[in-house]
Length: 90
Image 1 (cartoon, rainbow, N blue to C red):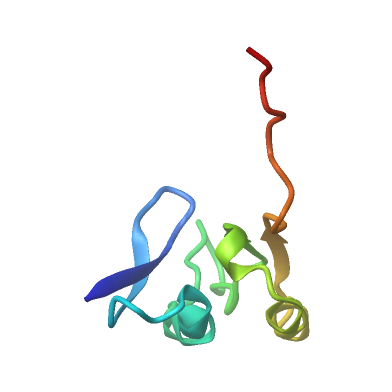
Image 2 (image 1 turned 60 degrees about the horizontal axis):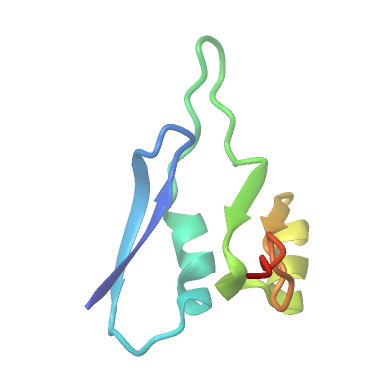
């Protein structure tokens, strides 16, 4: 069993799902977003949804990016096939 979490800015888990070990991560993206509670601020009415979603390369699929934009979330997902740092020559 593999656990997938949706952490807050401070690293506190907001939602958790358990799946089999051979399931792809992206299959649990939308259920995790639906399970995340509303955001509490310092005062006033709580925001109902998150603004951004940070994810690694395993979530880089065009269909999920479009679904996130439709939900009002800005997807900040690392691109597949692009290195974050250049290789060093030895």
